Length: 222
Image (cartoon, rainbow, N blue to C red; front, side, top):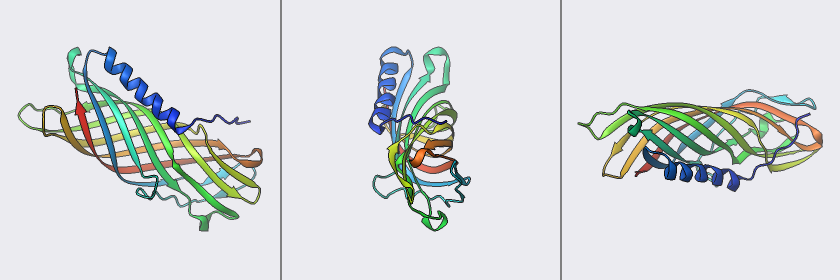
């Protein structure tokens, strides 16, 4: 039986911040902190529950509906280890996922909108050139997802943060360094999430959700 493992969103964000601060104080490398928002959508597999539901939720993102889509990350660039193009990031994303109620028979509410929270550890590679201010980069990583599960149906109501499962991440973007410490960036970022959470009446809900986003952000280097 899948047991509930509840994680509050502030605790997840605090974990990401704490890990970044610890790394910044202990690692011998160039450090960078980034914050971003943008346009995020969602697709995925059918939703299946252990008590018999099986339907296509026709996922959507609605990036700017409150609370909006956002994220932040800390990056350790390994320049002092003679690996200046390589980096490691800890990335927290607050994604938004809505199910189409027209496709959810007997359900009156179905969302992961506060949100589908993801925390991933990633390897990054940047294509530096000292003669230019813009730098392309790519990254791959993996971590966890913690959705805020919102389900209302005839058998009951679910409204809580739950541990969902694994999250895989890929990204590619370009940054522009406009001062010694500050840069802007635009990127594509996709996450594939394996979600398995408890809902009302002792049932489990399983689905895979792919979130995809065009992000715009700002970075501080130190």
